Length: 138
Image 1 (cartoon, one colour):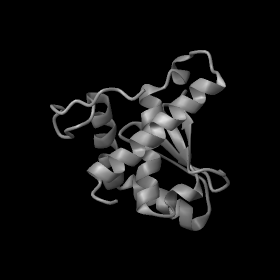
Image 2: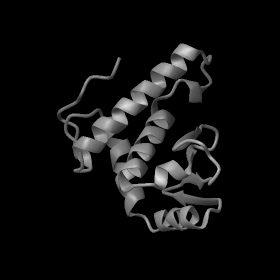
Image 3: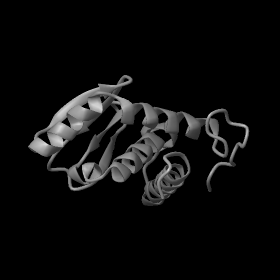
């Protein structure tokens, strides 16, 4: 079940304060000069690690997914699929930050298939809604 929406949340009406913080962080990430280094790594087909706002973001050309959460490092890995378009990159960053921010798995909770599935669905749904509502693209 998704958290209730908070229409009074400053900066991003219609989302919770935690979701607003995620959206703001992704907006800063997308505008950061370090994002250029990740795009260069994608074009060159090489691994690269950057820090954006203290958050570790690693590009791995062999990752068979858009992204993978690094709970212990408080960051995530991007695969080539994430960098195929601006839309996919934004959605992947939203998804990964949602997992880092809200996951019970990252807090050491018992991992079960149902929990993993529910958290993945919640992150996916949030990323889609936030992308459409706050990044001006449908």
